Length: 442
Image 1 (spheres, rainbow, N blue to C red):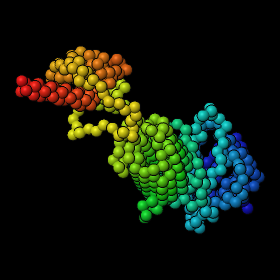
Image 2: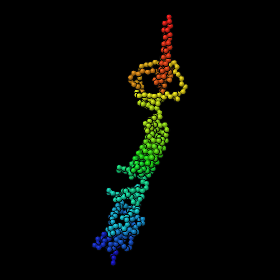
Image 3: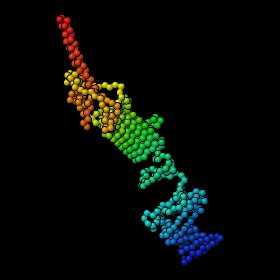
Image 4: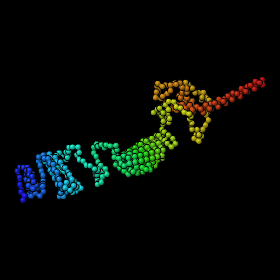
């Protein structure tokens, strides 16, 4: 028969060869090793049916060797509640009795509740190298993770965070996708999609060289690209409509947005080439104009400037081409087709006009106008202010009031002057011959 001992006012530690128990406060125990708190009869080594409360710092180390029958503990309980500073160390082991746990989970912590502490205080205060350690794969939102951390769902991070390693948020096939919807349908390789839905529709086939080696950066950049490869789209909606075009470079807001199948294009600037649908084109522009500041056609090696071009100067003025310094050319041509001309009339009194012109030698005022890059060598020519009253067609005045002479326009004037002079010579020769004839008659 079991012998019961009750201890109420103080704690006593008993050491027995066959069994032992510890009695604290209102605790019941027997010499066979069964102890209970809150019960009149102990059925297990330790059985508790009341709350455990401590107002002083305590430390517990609890080790179970044997099967822990916890079938009745899948409810929510305040297992331990503290009012003072406490530390708990839990060591979970496989059951020595059966070599495997009764459940697939060694232990399951459902909740931790603290009654004291300031707002913002951590629920756990841990020391050591590993606050929480798992050897294997961790899955959040999925039951069978394939990597150290697999997350099925969105991840939100506030504040500054760092991701180390050679690649960041890389998908299979050597791609880098960063941003909501970026490269969401991607099946190509070697792509970099950065931005909201950048490269969203990229499909690709690495074996066939489709949808590979693209770089799309910006909101909706390259959104509709499916099989296009080796494109660089940088800017909001740059290359948005491109589907199969290759080797394009679009830089700027809406640059090349409407180009769907063109290849080998270079569009630089705000809205540059937005409406261009061809291939091998160059646009440098800050609007959606079809006449950009700089236009080119790589297939024909054509370069056009849609404005005034200054060489060695930033102020070409009213001239389409202004060369500040010497220019060398093998030859030049000037438009002269009669189909482009009207009000055609001969030049009269050309010789008289030529006789009124004054050719001079001179040097440029290089010290007063260094920005003009005038040569230091002596020059010959006309004075514009002297030429304009005689032949106004030879003189042009720019927006700043400075005058220039078109020497090439002297050519037709000289032609007519020579013809007039030749007529005069012939007339004089006729008179001389007449005088000779009359003299011979005398």
